[in-house]
Length: 75
Image 1 (tube, rainbow, N blue to C red):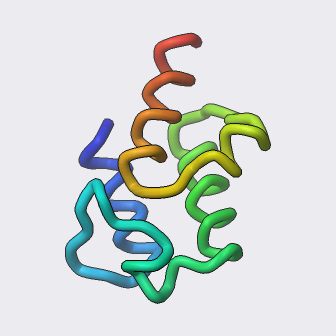
Image 2 (image 1 turned 135 degrees about the vertical axis):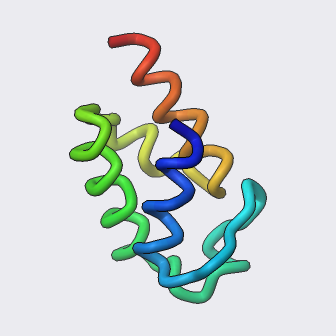
Image 3 (image 1 turned 90 degrees about the vertical axis):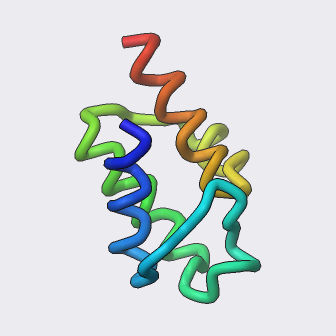
């Protein structure tokens, strides 16, 4: 699941390489619209619907992976 998430985020943000510590400050294309696009794309891809509260808690790539793994586990 982690590789799929990283690949999708990389594509959305138009960067070749990302790491788990990357965040909106380290990736110039990661603005509020890109943040929502990442969440929406991953929700559709993984057939999950994360809450708004969890969406706004995401601060970096690692947080995205943790949140989606949590939701996938609780299905």
